[in-house]
Length: 259
Ligand code: CNA
Image: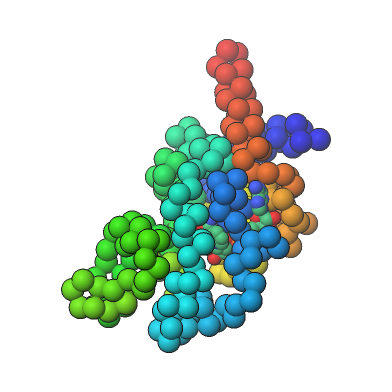
């Protein structure tokens, strides 16, 4: 069954002229970064999301945000791209996908080698002073925070520094979002990987693509509300399935070359 699904996915991606990819936290769980909705993740246990992970909450009590986000930062900074990230980098290198739209903040797509990546919810690569808006490389700030667990402050003005991740109540970064909408509008195929499709407006991008006639492939461990609209649904681990799809595409290409 999985074998047939892999072959179908490879054929669909091969036949498409403008494929785009939408990813969520599930593509990075094989890298050891928990997603938000798995029960064992624990990120939301005993916390009020608005208190710790909203812009309002951050301004009231940045220490509570930093205390909450500590385990996610710790695991993310040490994580490496997995086989699913590398498979998407290979698809881009082969000219088979126009770009990756991601809800992830872990920067693993760019680290795997993808060049066209639109990070809708920000990233842990940079951090900004919430007072003077100076932008910093986040790595040394995060490393310091992991050592002393103190709220980082701006060396220039003393304001509180916030990683460039989007909190509840914050606008999505406009450029990545507009670029993502543009990709989705032009798509004739959207490959959706490791997202529960519960968070808008990212979850609306497949609907936009479908309105313009795009086919949908979903690779996700659990069912999503878009499964019934998809051309192909694969309920399996992305890190297992995506390399198989790339391999299958390479063998189709090799077969065509020899004809
Ligand atoms: P989510 O709502 O946690 O859903 C993840 C989905 O992925 C679930 O439906 C799982 O069944 C599925 N899944 C988990 N592991 C795999 C796997 N190995 N292969 C295939 N499917 C899998 O996450 P969404 O991305 O949909 O939610 C959006 C939030 C989560 C965004 O705001 C992200 O910033 C945020 N988030 C990001 C990260 C990260 O950057 N790695 C980690 C945790 C949360």
